[in-house]
Length: 559
Image 1 (cartoon, rainbow, N blue to C red):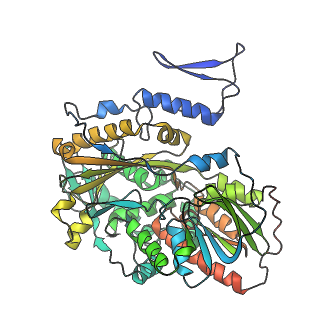
Image 2 (cartoon, rainbow, N blue to C red; image 1 turned 135 degrees about the vertical axis):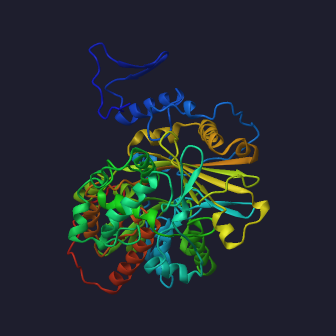
Image 3 (cartoon, rainbow, N blue to C red; image 1 turned 120 degrees about the vertical axis):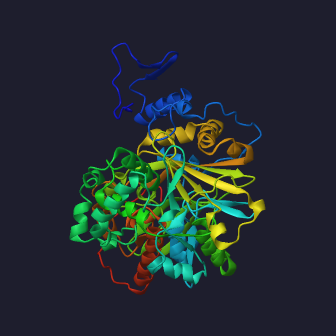
């Protein structure tokens, strides 16, 4: 079903109606905004049993494990992930009155508390900075929790390289990731999971072999499934202009179905909306090793935050929502709200923007052309489900991929790295994590905002029971759901060209650190972005020369 992308004009008689199903009517008129219309439609579709995955017309009930009765004594935890409350107030221009007086002057302010922000803080550890994080826990989508000694992630799971910036920060923190080869992935053939991408008898392995051969020369010019804006060459820029689908022709339908699921889970996009540059970079992940930490990438963000808190806990302020970043020729003025609702203003010599382009365009007084570049970026969203079991019921690869009839493309196993390290204990049980992506656009976010945790949980459980059997639900104790409304930028054609232009707009007063500005939306890009932003900040503080001349920013009346 195609969701309408424009507002409908009212009929001469007033309000217009669209019949969805017997007894369900969608009403809209000239006062109905596109956002409101999509929210109404998404909620109605959800109530009709439509899929909460990428295809809104798909009926999850048809995919349920027929005949499996699910138990009722499973604990369902409150939502984690994004909290839309203050962000939607900002979007709706419900802006509080900002304080005029400055409370303090510091060298650097870091806006955000995810991987990029923490990496920047790590590189500024001997300097005067303040990190402002919206949530109680730092880490961004690399946050997680612990169940009986078994850490698991609400989002980001693994690394594709441990050299360069990533290797340095891991060494600094004395972390020891475990290397896993291509056996890390397995593919569902309808009755069992097939491990790896090599030497299998199933027909898909012929396609894997062909893809590895055809893409080898391109992959050799990229960096370990992580393409950085700073590494662009004229040859690679050509791949940024075309769709991934132009590079993947003649492959079998079952293979392309699995690849499509892999791309959607990894990049919130498919072969027909990702660029060849970003898509091929993501696909390289299938043929190179990955590196796992116990509990996923939250182990890294926790280690950075704990290291800071040991010596300078005052440098991290959590529950701090940033309303405004007013750039000036000699720095910036930042207004944020604390947990109690009190607003504060701090001035700095340089501000590091470690939030996504969508948020930066709202809170920073950027030039209009720069904001236009940022607003043009589209975002996919995710529902993530952690299923906490009393015992192991699923023994397979770390990441297990499913065909398109399921609403989630993959299942990851949190205890994999514990097993490899020899740290697993029987009493830990097992945590399985599924990722249910939504295509770029607001309908997925509307489902996440309005959807029932009970219904989401039930739908996911039915599908998992259908794959893993009755033993799964018998061992299930707790379900943790996370919703990520703007999980990642969708890296379509010209994305890298756009980010190159955005980065060129940095001045003495600010730097971009978030992964979206520096490459694929991934931990590696965030870590590099944090390091680069910190180095720029230090360089700008030492130099009083205005590299770009005066900054003709418009005056924000609220600041």
